[in-house]
Length: 103
Figure 1: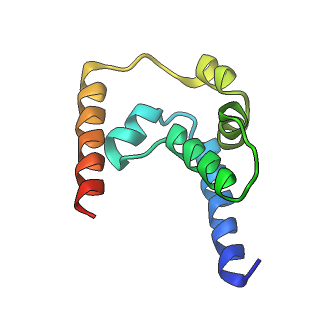
Figure 2: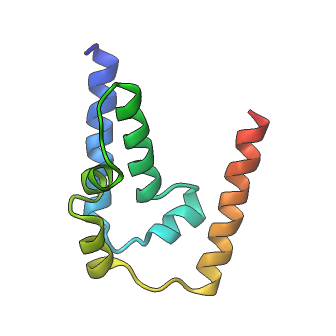
């Protein structure tokens, strides 16, 4: 692993640590305001593992990102979404799709 990969790995671990500290921040709010959430990170983790030739299940990827089984996280920390949150998330998802097409 070169120096840049070590730095990127450290940043990723710091991001996971930060998200773990901020369990009060709902995924739908992350998605609505930033265009990604913990589920996106777990999908990206799984995709990167596959590209590296490592077999990682969706559940394993989510557990890595959430620091616990996904169902446990949902039961402990996830709250029902409001209409406003759902609308903002829908707008964010549409923006992500538009930006991907433009690039």
